[in-house]
Image 1: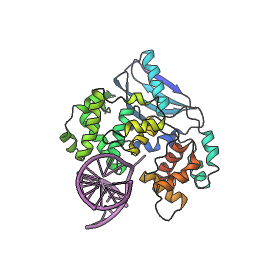
Image 2: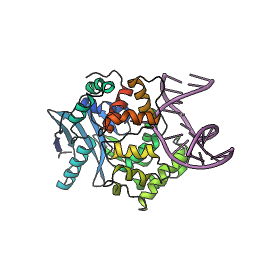
Image 3: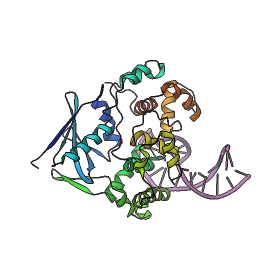
Image 4: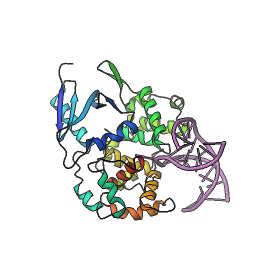
Length: 301
DNA sequence: GGCCAGGACTATG
DNA sequence: CATAGTCATGGC
């Protein structure tokens, strides 16, 4: 205790912390926890796990860490949090554009200030996305939590132990049967462990993807067993925060489009791609708002 | 109780 | 190429 590091991070434009974090506790119950009305999540800074308390005060994201951080660690944490909470994304041009899309204008307006929350790193994003393939979100969250409890470590915080998302090394040490015991299917157990082992032995370097354009990232990822186009697009969306992704085959997106555009049948991937043409260069945010609409159709501010 | 979940792989025409 | 079957289980 004793020493506390406090950070105040101002957003680039209109920002609703309430709308942005509303979905975290239910969808990401594996990672975010609420204590006393405050949001907490464990993160690695310079390899060591810490607990970050998050809130909104005045016009800024307020982060608090009960640790002594070096200046370099503090800078790294600041950078991570700005990226995770999309604090540098100014949505004004998106909002202006969506006013011209009749089907989306109202639901976008209702979600004023809603930002994407990214995963802290590409590995966590990749593993969570693979686990989520084809499963309903609730069950996916259960499996993710079980993986964290099995493979990850814990960090002590105010008298309790909080789970930390495992490193590739920690997952690489598991056997397929360990994950099957958690009710992963056999193939998914292989994907998760094999990809972790590739990262450990150096044959897969996710950070090298950061500098590549979207399509090249997809091309590099597709040969990996367990990674299809949808998974690669999710990594671009929730790992990197790329602004113009359209995972048109996504079942949730297609359901949302069906509701919002009032098509009688579920639209095909091609039809979604066609409708989504009007969303560029903000497709990622249009998709994200549609996903949010799907899970909370009558959200009010 | 059947069918679908914010898919991907594999085997078969 | 194109399609069907498979996977584990929760929720509706």
